[in-house]
Length: 427
Image (tube, rainbow, N blue to C red; front, side):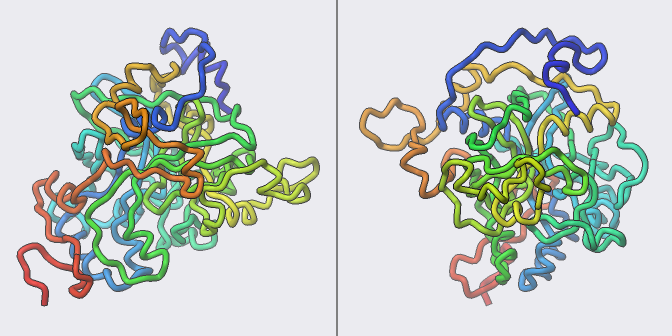
């Protein structure tokens, strides 16, 4: 297992990073955490080719199938080499059927491509995403634009009986992946924390891009197009923690939260604004959403998986809590793939935090400091903050136009037309 101290001393067999001992610092405020999250959280989704748009439109009224069509997810920028950026996310953001089915990509010559949207609104196109390993995964992960450590597809033989994530789809292996994009722009890189320091009762912050259409499908509803998306920062207390285990796809930090479908792969930050995990499982039980308390308020002592002699009941935990991977395990897997990345082990800088705070909407409160303000104590009934400064006006337009394909889907504001195609009247 990855050792944080060892990483500081000799990161990745000869790559010098010049990390100094980390000074103690005051706990960051929620607006400061949100500032870091805003700059390092990305949205990940396949490019909306005409073939994929047609498939999406045909399944609008079939919630079970619609979940299998277009699945925007989230991720965190964790490393940079020159003009290449690396995003840590979850494997279940990449359907195997997208990687293997040329019919989805006829308009792009049969080459799978995805888009990574950064906080400045640019969607970066990544071509040749298929890592060629199939599902279940075969061979050793190699340094490509996409490296998966697990795979997802309920249509692949051999994956039907493994545990399923909150979207109901099979995941085999460790539910982690890393994908890269190229840009000459200067994007923030998340500071890597040490997940071994996360304790029961600690507060964690989860950032990601909720997908209201996935939420509709999860609720068994007919899916109406929702083109506007808004990034969310959710928070909650850690209720249980296990050692990472492949049988549980690596999920090992369990917490109360107010996340939503679409936030899978998004970063999980500690109180110092350092990335300690990647969110990937949302509990169907949101009764604890926004409520924090002592560890014993979550689990009775007889149920505590960390109690002496107690075996972990991950099914029970998944009903009570949402869950994330541990960043230490992710780094272990990346090392095994022969990918050597210069991770950022420094604490988040004051300049980084100020940059993300600049231009954010200010709530009108007495004594306003001129920056984004929200009181986590007052907001415990919600447990989440939807950032009005981090909005996608039309995700369909962005994920069609970035590849020159144009957009055809838009919202149905009246609720009576179903899917509307651009340029066509409501029937």
